[in-house]
Image (cartoon, rainbow, N blue to C red; front, side, top):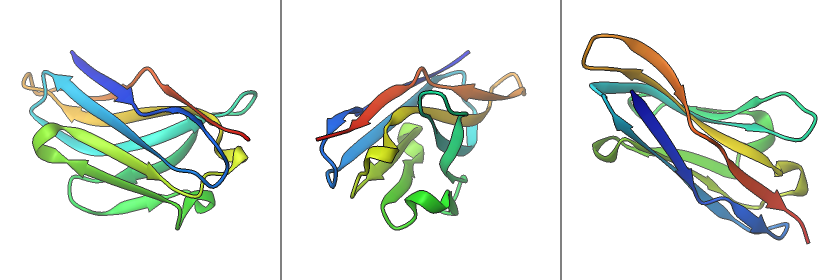
Length: 120
């Protein structure tokens, strides 16, 4: 079993910033890609950003230049620095990790989500 625990969400005014963290623990031999997704009320879950086991990143167009994804492999943790936040960034943000466990299995795991609200 693997657990992903997110933190850092909250209420922020437009133009503000937040930093999300997601720590993975459990039966982890290695983690391939890690990423952040979000789901706004009434909408489908969408990819926000991913980072592979190195430094290669992918962002959805709407956050490019404002959000930065990074990871600390020693801590099995992924971060999302969100700057210049807009009301349309309001959503539940979910962490995702592609994990290879010690038993050899490879599974995609999800965190429980953290709420981000951008409002004045």
